Length: 402
Image (cartoon, rainbow, N blue to C red; front, side, top):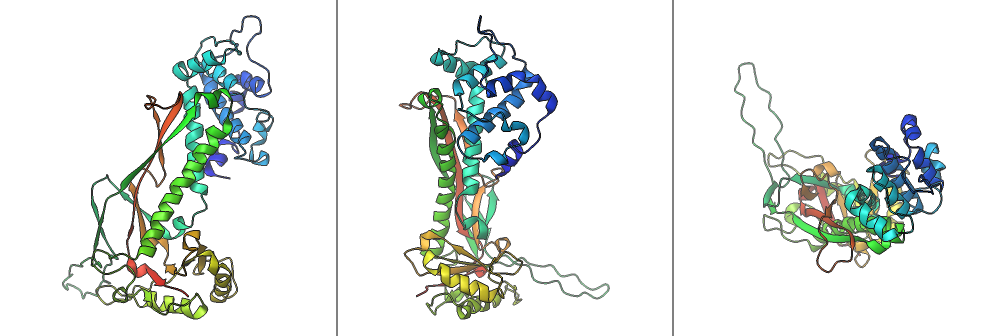
C-alpha cells in the first residue's frame, strides 16, 4: 500500500465522528439521508464533513481498484462496497452547507450547485491529487534508486560544484597555527530547472456518469508519466556522454570513470569498475573510498547480472544488504549494450534538481477558469519543474558493453 492508503484507510476512525455522521453510513449502504416526502436534508452539520470526505475518497479509491478490500480498515469495509454514486455524493456535499439539494433525478442541477456552492470540487481535487502522487511514487522506474534530489530556490540559473570535497584536517600542536581549509571541486556545472506542464480535465460527463476511471486512473497514469519523463532525462544524460563544465565528456579517461574494454558485465568487469571508482581522489590527493552500489543495464543483461550479483555478493542475490551490489534494469537501454555503475545516492553522481518545497513531487493546481475550448468540468494544471545534471563524475563508471 502507499502512504496515502495507510493514512486514509488503515487508520481507525473516530467513533464519535462516525456516530455523528449517521447519514454517511446510510449513504454508503444505499439508504438516502433525505426524507422522501419533502426531500429535505436530515443532516448538514459541518463537523460531519471531514469523516464524510475520508469515506468518499475511500469508496472512490476502492471502486477504481487502487486498493484491495483487505487493505481497508475493518471499520470502513462495510461502507465501501457497491457502485459509487457521485451524484449522491454531490448531493450530500450540498447538504453539508445547510442547503436543500435538488431532487436526485435532476443531475445537472445537482452538479451545477455542487461545483459552485459546496466543497464537492475539493473532493475531486483531493482524489485527483492523491492518485497523481500514488502514480508518481509507484512508477516502475529505477532512477530514484541512484539519483539524488537537489532543491533549488527558483527558475534562475544555479551552479553546482561537481565532486566537492574537503581535505582531511591536520594534527596541530598545542598553540600551533590552525590553517584554513579549502573546499575543492572538479569543476562547476550550470543549469536551470525547466517547467513541464500538462492539463488534466475531469469532464462534467465523467462526473455525471460516475466515471471513477477518469477521477483516478487518468491522474494516476499522469503521475507515472512525470516519473517516466525524469527517467528519460536521467538516461539521456548517461547515454549522451556530453561534455561537462570542464569541457571533458562525462565518461572519459581524464575523469577516470571509463572502462574502455567494451565488454559485457562479468565479475572481472565489475571488479574493474570497483578499481576505477576506488582510485578516485580529491584535489588533495586523498582517496575518496567510493565504490559501486548499483549496476545499471538493459534487459538483455538481466540474467547475466543475476549471476554477477550472486558472485559479487557472496551468494546473496537480494542485493539490498549494506555493501551489496544492486542491479537495476531499465528498458531505455534495450537497444544498447551500454552499462553503468553508480555509487550510493549520497555521493550525487546524478542530480535531479527540483524546486524547494516540492519534495520532489509533481504539483497540481485546480484552474478556477475553464481553458478556452476545454469541455465543461473541473480542470487541473499538472506541473513539475526539474533539471537532470551530473553532480559527481567520480561516483559513476561506464562500459560500452558487447
